[in-house]
Length: 606
Image (cartoon, rainbow, N blue to C red; front, side, top):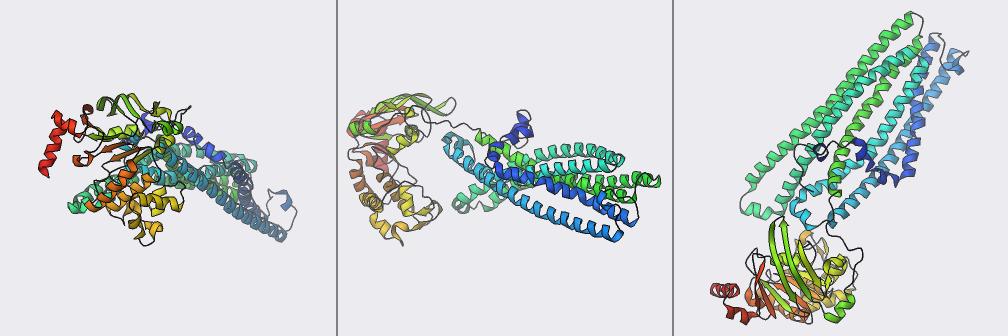
């Protein structure tokens, strides 16, 4: 998904997508709770009928007092006191019934809304974490956080406070309209006709609100993105005294956000004020036409009183409808934004007929072959060009070259974080695209320069959700010479680690990464500047552990310090994405090429 424009939503750019099409995307989530939704909808019937009866009861009470004919048959031919008592008890029953049913329905709808919100958030999270790295290269983290949090919450409001509530309001308007026509058709027709211009105005203002709300949420994404960037990079911000400059940038984005929010408030307020004005006009119209009919003895005073209440009640659901419609518009904006991500294709998928490496590995120990592989992060800008080489089983191969030569890109293609544009990558003769990602990465142990640590404890950061016994965890720690470090921690393997391992040093986080790879016993080991952040003493421990770990395994090693790769079986030298030299340390020095230049330059520096 590309970053959204700050002016118009995707739907308006590609041809307006109707609200009903957007709502249909939520229908499968609603159908998962069809029983609760059906029951909540059934509660609308007695609630609407109770609300429609109340003005009639009040009107008939006035008719009884004025000794006029009543509309309800059971109030005819009864005394004033008896009639008032009956009306009072009936009115209390309808009020209690409406209060209880409204509360019950509101609870059920909110419950369904929360369940739907949770389900959508789960699906969105799974989809986002399944997307290829290309997506994350072009999408700021703050924008994704906005999608997963505030957008999903607004989306849930479509169900919890919007869609069901609107159905209830529409049903109430329908019941009130039918009841009014049964009472007196001229007054009823006048009130119903007044609904037409109101509906047109509401639709217009809601469309404007929808556009403004999309832009406001887009600005909120930018705000969150900037906030996340500054918090993660707070060290650099403070070291270079960027607080005031960054605060000014943040203030500009914040002002853009407030400007768009003000537009949504304006359109929302316009709807409320329009309805308030129309409802007063409706009451005035009822008094005018109703008074004329009363003087002409065509209408009782009690019926006129009932219609004054109906004029208020007819526009009350419409006012609530408009408020809920605002929530729905905000939710539909969120549906568009979330759908943009859900429509983002998962580029790297498992084969429908996958193969397995288990038996193959037991026999060959892991051969890696690149066959004329080319790769570009951006179309036409190739970072790897026609790479063709083979790494034999058990061979230790180093990748060397200046910055930007394509060393890390080779690792990303091997692990299928990205797909090659041209050529094939084979492990033991099997194309990596024919392997499931789980199967491929089970046999690849990758240790990067920055050992990422999750919030949790030491034990969970080694197992990463897989099932290993405590003995296996301790054995992996001992084999990588970090058991003593872990045992010195306050609670050993159960020591809590803060987000991103804030309570560990860079070297300690890297040690955990080695244990994480060791416990999985991979057949192929990939080290991408894995010892760069370690001090001399710690690196000596790791080098000793690495000698044991590398035994009998195929290994790819990336290191800028060329002295650490002198003992590799073979060194591949890259420049601008092309393989230009290959051989062991002595052979490459004898050639006097790029490798020799880099090596002697480092020797001079040291």
